[in-house]
Image (cartoon, rainbow, N blue to C red; front, top):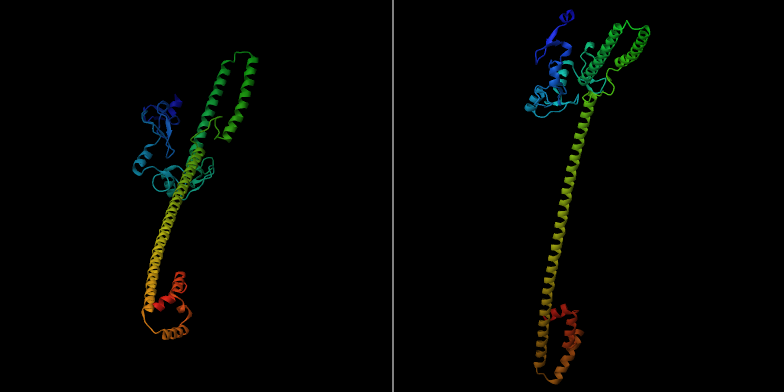
Length: 351
């Protein structure tokens, strides 16, 4: 009764039953029964533990983060602790407040990230180490587990001592055996206690906290790498799309150029054909004119009456004066015109 009166009791925030302070939860100040009915859940954004108030609402987001999501939207990763809780800017509220109070961030001694803040107080350090918030929480959980393990082992020892005191009336051999057994159990439990004190993070064998700081850091790093890889893939896809557009544009331009060149070649061929046909028609007309002129010249030569002697003398003189191609008969002139060799000269003479 004296022990219960000396130790102060605190009320549960849900059922208002009084319990020692160690038995109540740290966040919501709940007893074991209320904690069993409403489990403790970690927030997906700020990674802080909170008690679920209702069984119907099983969301893993605390009230603060839920209000921030409604006000500012989904958060991004903090540039210091890599927790996805940066609702305003690139820093979460915890890191921003601690930076405002204690100055710039320092590297954590456990996770080796620049997310710890030096408070310049050795009492705030955990086992003399400067740790970030996630590492301190995980270390505190590990220490609490080791304390529970040690308390359970101490209770087991006290029960063993009580059983020994109650069986004093037994034989001496049995007492010696029980003493030897208790000594061996003490010798076995002491190295376990030393190991647990040396490595408080290990706790029980085979127990691994999935929500520890190492897991959270690894998960955040993996999420960041996935996001960066997705951005790179999107950039590559955009580059490929732009290159495909350029290729299609160049192909279309090449097709248009080839079509234009073909049309120009066809037009030029048509113009050349028309010009050639016009020239042929002109040549044929000119040949017809030359033939008519030659016929008229023949008629003029045959129609004039002259004495036989005078005509021969004049003809001989004209033959000596005129060039050789004019002395030829008209049939020879037409042949040369068909060959086209003396066509310009004949055309000038007759014109």
